[in-house]
Length: 286
Image (tube, rainbow, N blue to C red; front, side, top):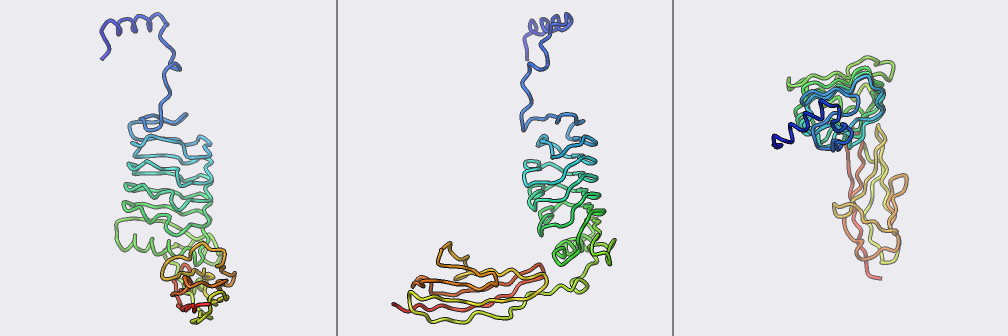
């Protein structure tokens, strides 16, 4: 507490118009309770609407409600809401958002309301909302969502919200036109012609002499087109210039060594499911 004499001196200076200017005080630092420029703040609520903002402003970690609607924000990166563990409501509707980093909302354990409607979101990466365990209301309607096989993870998430009865969600398809306006939660793999991967050419066991070359085939079909991933002895392949994965999914190993012996597994995976096939390399001494 300031001494009484100092308080009296400040009072006299203020009345005489000689008080130190506010600009002489140090600016608030990240982590303190403060309000972004041009925003309105009261307690733990921050309102930054109609400000033509192009990015998410830094706010206090104590923020529980954040209004950012009707701005010009185009993307949300993974650091946008870092440190806001107390955030309960986030309003981002009526912006220009096209992309969301899948980790944007990872560290928001208390988030109950997330409004993203009336933006330009066309695609969502699987897992974008998976960590929102407190979610009660999610809005994604009035976006540009492409309802293809890649969005089925969202359909499953929305179904779990309905079945649990603990959350409400709205998300509608914009494309393809034949299902425009449909709730994402009602989309099925069959009507989108989605197919689980199936391996059409699988690798075969190889017995090889050290120093030679091994080639494993692994071709797969499905919708979406499956991604091919190789493992050796159930772990990712090492970074080695001798090892190459071809565009068709095959595996080349040049100048084979004894250490290359083992189990090789080809995984074909897409948003519908995955399948695998295994083969072995036995390297004989040169």
